[in-house]
Length: 191
Image 1 (cartoon, rainbow, N blue to C red):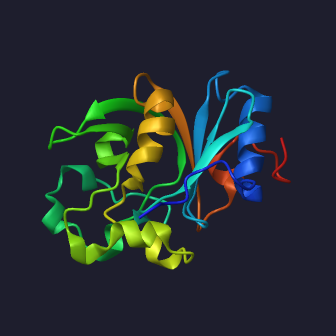
Image 2 (cartoon, rainbow, N blue to C red):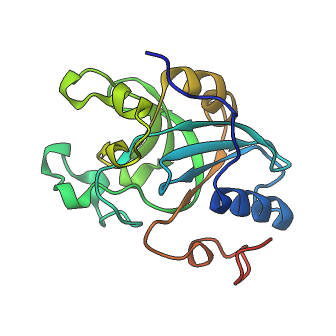
């Protein structure tokens, strides 16, 4: 099944505003970066000047919300309740790493056990590839909080930028204001 994973189209307005403000303020440290727009369930990869390189649909935490439950990263996955499965919002200094299964990942928030990784398809009943290909964003909410990316997009776009060195990912909030999460944004949401 082919998945849409190209730079076709423009990023959502909020993602573009954050990207431009990050560059204008120098918050991106003159490096390429990613922006996850949870409302559109999409990852946008930008170059160091804030130009869109590529975008892809992603799968996110099944629960809406912008904060991880304190201590969630130390709990067994079977003990994480459905309402606790959030993808946290904010500015994250990412680190390449390896998860407990030996898979290379990009750690978004290591303490909360939130990473960006290739979509896993081992549980066929979850239909993760179909969810990524669906035009609906409502069915993109299925993970425990991690950001699941199509394997090809991960290998071609994420890994070269974030998988070999520390990087930056901005995860846009869905329940709070963008300005609250990103101090480099002015009150009008413009750089």
